[in-house]
Image 1 (cartoon, helix red, strand yellow):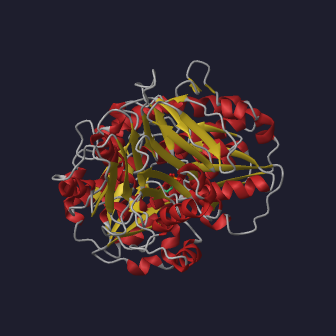
Image 2 (cartoon, helix red, strand yellow):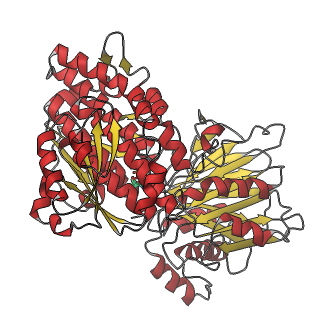
Length: 620
Ligand code: M6R
């Protein structure tokens, strides 16, 4: 949830670290800090509460001459967001500084033990325990920092990605990980005894300098040397052979490209993102679906007694749409589980179950733990993720990447539609193998699915003006979102989008559930967003709208182009092109994303960095 950047080489470290922190700020933004070994050999630590810009201002008159450094942007877990609790943390002697992502679960007992042995603490964080533990271990064993870190980490329970500087050794940068991602970038200046390494909790701070990366594995520790040497071992000091990967990421994907916010850019990117996602997978000529992740393991899917999908947040909503489609098309029962609940139950898992993890980041701690549990129980694991090389794809037996490009806005938009279309392709691919659809129906569904990106573009082009309309709802304290069938998960997702970036309370309901309680909430001040496409249960939803109208609720509807009945009953109406009932979510969500964006803007919210949230939830 926090972000780490590191650098060692011949360049000045500070500009690389600060730029990296700006790129990582979407991961956490309550405080930030930087540590360098400067030209005079002094190990400096500068930290401040708030955004990275506050840190920059506070560092303006400081020595930033070092060519080795580490930096951190924080999302508080232990200890309130302030400069003292911000990372990096010094060890007691101030010889070491350390940054950390993750949670040290046994930090209290470690701290008590260290205090008994004379170590003193400045902060309330679990991270300071780590740096003191490493220093204490080094003092006790009289070993080098690398060995001390290995030994110290053996007594740590929890998740960590760490980077450490030692002022007595300005030519080495040490890092280690377990449960939290860490990537080493191999600089292009390496060679002839010269070396340059970059470090990041994801690839975003690195890609500007190199596309050659090494994904550190769990319980691995690395030492990067200024002379270009890199050593990686596990905690038992057994040498590991690093695999260098070439990243395909493009720097433009990490910029706002003229949009006011990443969220807005990502909303408008969706038609093209989905074209890329389906490229080579939806065959327009033969009207076929080719998902290599399924083809390679088709027996597992054909024989699956059941599919269980584990996910969190927005990914859980896309999973629910996937359930409806897979059950309908491939006739396999599907259960959708909140990963955080699943992991702590004792779920029944059969050896012929397929467990699918859906996750944009591929790093969500609960989803990762859920699939590890399923793996232990013998299930076949499939990952649907966006971030290439992240933990979930590496932990699963097979899977499909979304390929929608980096999603930086904290509120998920293009990853949601990417997940939904991937689940549709997956459902179709299984249906093909199981022959559960007639040939005509299969071809028709493939044909219509490949038209969706163009229909998304139409939807975005024809729903301008939401910005003005959204102003009217800044007064609202609550919203209700209603949908039926495939559009019930859209109602949930629309409500989540509004909640997380505008801080207006919103609830999604299956429309027919209204009369079982929530209808009591309706009055003239309650905006009710209804997804009411022409197909599906149109007449039923018209009746649901009547029930709300007669209680004076304000109706905002999403209707099929040309609809007059629901339009006539609505205070405001968004139009989408006609499509198959099952594919409506891919179109209906677009105006709802824009609505939440513009309501949040009208309320003056920071949509890319909403309060209390972080993009990737790598802690429980
Ligand atoms: O990276 P993941 O898809 O696993 O993340 C799951 C949720 O944390 C995420 O979807 C969250 O709900 C978003 N902020 C929603 O916009």
